[in-house]
Length: 177
Image 1 (tube, rainbow, N blue to C red):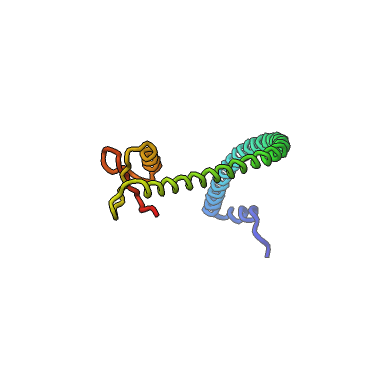
Image 2: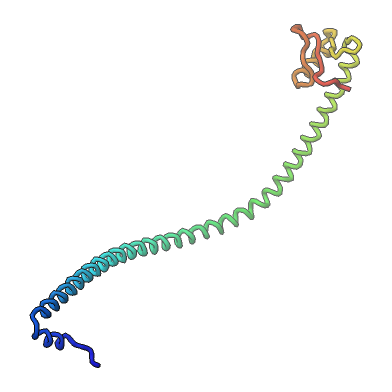
């Protein structure tokens, strides 16, 4: 069976004006829907054109940024090569400098050991020559300059503290052997 064409339908509709009016109404509705779809498609096409234009601008900006970054990379590579050369020069200097620093560190360690020995001897001198009551941790000097200086040094360096206001006696914070 053959499909009815629009012409066939129109020929049949001659028979009744109502059928023709129904068909015209259907066609007008379809035409209206087609126009709505066309308007919608036109709006979508315009929106897509705007988006494409924006994307083209973004692409151009990205391309410009990429070119600038390539230029920066080239400059940094040149600078890096210069720094590598400078580092090689500095490494030799650093070796000689560290040898000198090692000498200073060794000398400093020797001085610390000597100070510790002197402080130990000073504490022994206080125990031996200062006056103290049995079982008491307070040592009184006899106002001789060497004893006064020894007491001053021990208090000044936190090894002992003064007892009383007249600074004639000291007390060790920890009992010294």
